[in-house]
Image 1: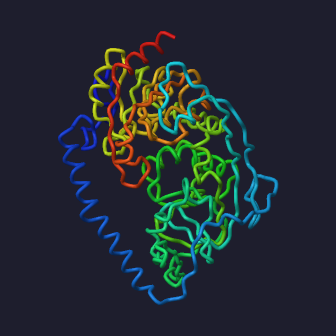
Image 2 (image 1 turned 135 degrees about the vertical axis):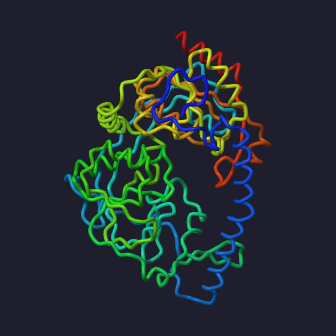
Length: 447
């Protein structure tokens, strides 16, 4: 679905949904109800369940202490076109380096994240496969936990947080006298979960997958699994994931889907990619994978006139919401920009739009990952609020060789303290300096 000022039409376009900027009144009501439900129902119920688990575990010494495994080093073996043997790892793709460049038109942050946007060398990591044995696999964050309570360090996204464990019913957090907590794994609560034999490449990092991380971290693993002809395992796929898989020429039965419930894996083939290695420091190999996907999409895509200039808007239910988005849309419309919300479009259409685009203005977010289909030299202006300490977009633009301009929108220290950017359920909004945006876009057009 496009938003406004759209000079083209999409087949199958649906009416505006509650999270569309076309319906601000519905959006306000939806957001208010969501906030009320989270504060009045979900959070209290979650806390009550944690208290109940603590009470049931009180006085029991049967739990195994839970901690992140930072010491186990798997033996390295050569990659031979198949999974590595048990308790070993192999390098499928070698690491590489490339340089970023801060465009002269950019407005860098005045906060700590400015270091990610100045000129520097990016170390894109290798793609590793790791063969673990006898692991519990939990849908929430895709945690792999051994029977001894060791959490595998490449089975969750980003820095580890104790909150990752709160949705695992078999893990109980118990307060300690010094005010800290210990986490205990109770295997007896997992006695009846399904047991899966055989070797499987894991494709799911969470039962609620993030679009950007899935495309950059997991899709290359699927491509690898197809080339090797090796079995893969995932939670039940979402419709958009099925659309992606359909363009990877996956043979029937090669990917096994299971319900998002805990399972015991006798052989788990995981990867350093599950911890966001390729989304934070994009590897050029990713571009090759999506060239294959785009070629398959072009075989099925209808012939249509598509805009050359895109304004990529985030879903308005998301955090980092722009208060004056309407003004941004109206200011860029005379310059020929069509505003879109990518998540409202079929996957194939998203790919074709970005492949056809010559100039993209995008809010910071996973929708911008679709630019992986765009050509080198594409003009990209990124709108981002200060306080977003996340280097992925800087590296992504450099890896794709875009003409990338970043426009940080200033945030006061008070605003950053009030609404932390990376806490769960944190919601914040900001305004875009529209005159500066238009001036920058106009200048980049003239380059």
